Amino acid sequence: MEQLKVLFVDDDINLGHFVTTILETDYNYKVHFQNTLLGIDSIVETLAPDIIILDVEIGKENGMDKAQDIIAKYPQIPLLFVSSHTEDDFITKGISIGGNAYLPKPLSIPVLVSYIQRFALKTSLPQIIELANYQLNLSTNKFFYKKQLIKKLSPFEKNALAVLMEHPNEIVTKEQLAEKLWNHSLETHNSASLNNILSKLRDLFKDNSSLKIRNIRGVGYMMNS
Image 1 (cartoon, one colour):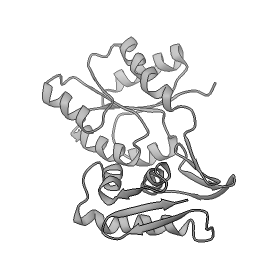
Image 2 (image 1 turned 180 degrees about the horizontal axis):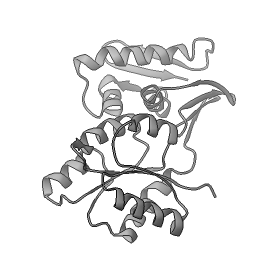
Image 3 (image 1 turned 30 degrees about the vertical axis):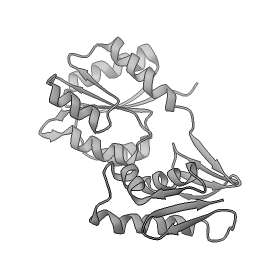
């Protein structure tokens, strides 16, 4: 069985090495640990972790703010917060922005592992959406037609296309897409970005008539199959 990949980000280096050693030795997980948020976006993109464990405060950096960006780009990756802050407002914010759980420090390894198993094992298998001979791999962002690779999509392109493919012949509103892509309602500065993303997605189907992305003026889009 392929090793489950864990991305652990915490500014406590001793804790990081301790948790990494136990998860790798006792549970056969593959752990990438780092103590800053530097380069975190490219690490998530390259590593494609099955779960992310993120400290709420990493030095002077705000882990929750970065978590919002990660969750918006990679909603399929579960994210666990860990923190010495146990106040209600910290916990409720962590859950409200999309965290799967909020674990207080000092960490209990059995509890941490139970959450990893609860959330990560569900997503460790390849997630593929299929429609009319097209396949979208949610884990790798790769888009195929009859098993032939068409393009590796950006996270935003992948997320938008996933919504449309999961709702064929149904209107998907711009608000629904904005919520999926940016975790908030559509705003003026996002509208042009959304139009650009959908324009790129429509180009994927220009040489094939079996699927088309139709613009529903003033409302949203529809995947016609």
